[in-house]
Image 1 (spheres, rainbow, N blue to C red):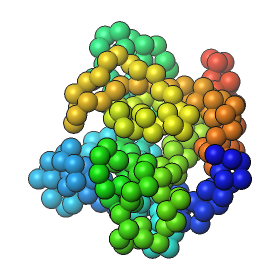
Image 2: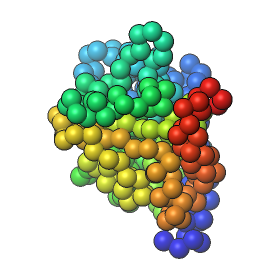
Image 3: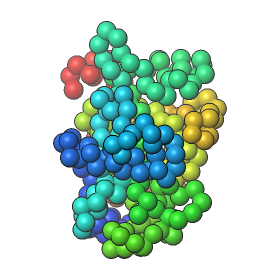
Image 4: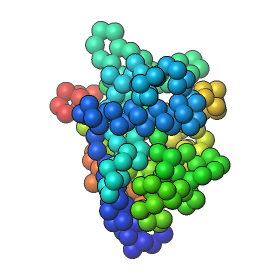
Amino acid sequence: MTVAAMADIVARYDQYFAVVRARTPEQLDLAYRLRYQVYCVEHRFEDPRWHRDRREADEDDDRSAHALLLHRPSGAAAGTVRLIMPALGERPRPLPIEQALDPVARARLGALAPQQIAEVSRFAVSKSFRRRHRDGRYGEADDVHRDDAAATVDRRVMPFITLGLLRAVLGICLEHRVSHLAAMMEPALLRLLLRLGLVFEPLGGLVEHHGLRQPCLARLDDLTRRSRQAADLLWHYAGRDLVEIEAVGRAATDPGWLHRA
């Protein structure tokens, strides 16, 4: 894709979508409702009987930073994501991913300072903004629904809908001075991130968790450096955040960085 084409996609994307941190009760309610639709109704990853209020929430939400991707013309929630933060204090709570790791991978994760790690979770795109078939839970193809709010969106933008959620993840990492991301990812999401130049390293082998998932880990400044060097679409969309993340990554090599941040 040429520089001009990437600039055009970014401009069109910003015309249709806004990324916001979900902090208010109303914003969180939108996120939980969308999660219910995706995780309980469409894919049955979670039992809808446990969420009779039609909101999918769990015990990790109270230690998570949440974000929404909003469709500007309608105000509809097009996507959501959260980052689970390790609890600090005398009795920190382990990240959910740790339960799926073998001893070697768990030791590798445990070698990092807890304050530096967050786990990407509940990465979801509304059905209205996704493709109809195959493994496209993340809207990465151009065969999308043309009903409701999605019908207003330029088709050239739809294959890149997850850009906003990725920018939200980067923004949360900056706010909380996170230097490493952990995740339990579907192969489809890993392939999508790879096409965007984001490479996550495996933490052990595939595990069964609502289907096959790959536990993985990435250092943020490694991800952002690759994006800058490639001058790819993510760089054109979120370059300022990527530069700041590289600075945080360099600072993280200093043991005193958290106290000065």
